[in-house]
Length: 117
Image (cartoon, rainbow, N blue to C red; front, side, top):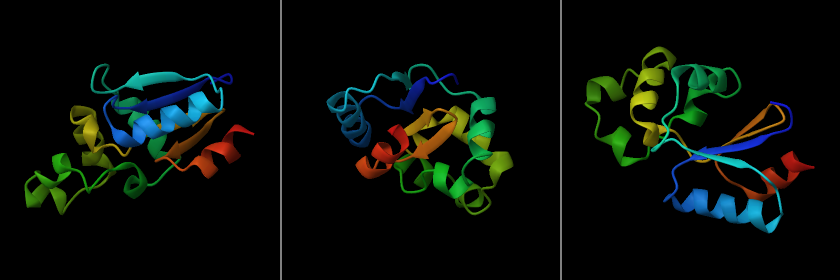
């Protein structure tokens, strides 16, 4: 990754707004990838799942996931979650932050601070 910091999310998400405000307040340069506009690849999701568990990455509390048929919701695993998240990026918890090979999912200022040191 060569030192680049990249934040993945959806522009109008409140948690994304908090994370972006934190980054700007702390003068940290980053690239923002809006996966509603730019999408997300299955390969990128697979890469993330090597670093975090599916339960960390998959947003089961969002309306997109909750609208899925019970048969799908009750049988989610990495193999079928990857195409689901690629097709419906709002099922991915936000933000996902890549920094120097590390991955953070969700936003906590203290975690961002520890990662950026």
